[in-house]
Image 1 (cartoon, rainbow, N blue to C red):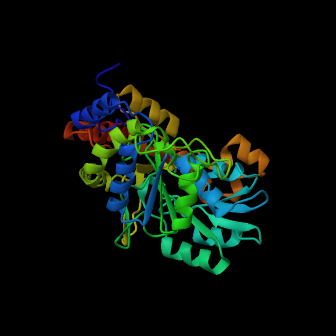
Image 2 (cartoon, rainbow, N blue to C red):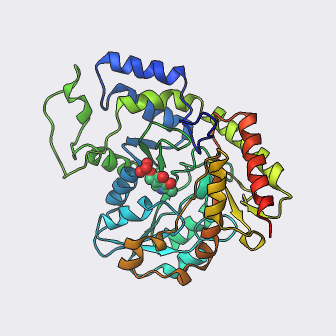
Image 3 (tube, helix red, strand yellow):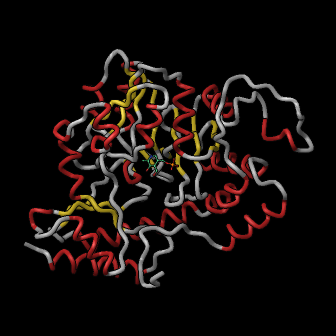
Amino acid sequence: MNKDYLLFHKPYITEEEINEMVDTLRSGWLSMGPKTIKFEEEFNKYIGSKKSVAVSSWTAAGHLTLEAFGIKQGDEVIVPTMTFPATAEIVCYFGAKPVIVDIEEDTLNISLEQIEKAITSKTKAIIPVHYGGQPCDLDEINDIAKRYNLRVLEDAAHSLPATYKGNKIGTVSEVTCFSFYATKTLSTGEGGMICTNNEEIAERCAIMRLHGINRDAWKRYSESGSWYYEVVAPGYKYNFTDLQASLGLPQLKKVDEMWNSRKYIANRYTEAFKDLDLITLHTIKPDRESSWHLYPVRLNLDMLTVTRAQIIDELKKNNVGVGVHFMPINKHLFYSETFQLKDEDFPVASAVFPRLLSLPIYPGMNDNNIDKVINVFTDILKKYKR
Ligand SMILES: Cc1ncc(COP(=O)(O)O)c(C=O)c1O
């Protein structure tokens, strides 16, 4: 590997995670067990949620939540187009229809107007996605949900930790699901968490994450457990493991420190790029704080002689890794064909997508790395100024 190449993301793993992992390996308990329970409890305390249920991924968390909501074949669930496909696919698992809607221009979060337009008698839920870590307009979304008797599942895959009007994401709506995938702001390699203020939802998800077993199934091989259990529903194999908790527990202790690092990097980028007219920076609304999982910028292509693909190539040649978040759902083959989605039905996402680029932003980056991104990116943009 080229040691000068700045990766787009690198998890922040220190001796603490390594020691905790070794301790787990020596303990003989690798799957769901005491460390998973501790991680759930500490996460719940950190967020201030009523209940937290740890699972194998955001996708599992979202699937279990929709199952607990009682989503069935023929139902409709509203999903923004600017997201990772997992947000829409969990709806398809039920034979239900993901109703894909456009986003708002400034934040790239789901458009309130488009939510209202998309509601029909079949609509059962809304999945707002906090794009890049910035919370959506949650008061308005919950108000719409109340008026039309819909459930809300926040896709907070990007937004640990983030706040909305002073409240931590994870405490605002009925259910919030987080991701601990390798690139996320707290990483357990793979993993997810369901936070909810509804105890019945928490209980259903806890049962369904481990084969539908009606009590502490994970304890059945422990000293205090019993071999006897009953299955109350055909559940899933979506449990978290103590191996994952070995990363999660130390990561949780430094979640604010990691957030501060990302805020520092975001501020440095914003300061460096604020007068550069070749790009447009992301807007953060004043009543909320982003987790800064992503630092998205929009290329002002009309002022440049090259496309985004050429800019990305040139960044890579200069040892700077970047990402694109996201190709809109309506552009993916399956969704466009199955639900007959056309670019012109998503004017905001269609216009912004070819311009989008995410710069590296993670705690292991030092000032030299940040300077490198700023200088290389600025030079490339200026080189191709029209
Ligand atoms: C917005 C969003 N939702 C959901 C997911 C799925 O998360 P997981 O990989 O934990 O299933 C991702 C993953 O990248 C994501 O970015």
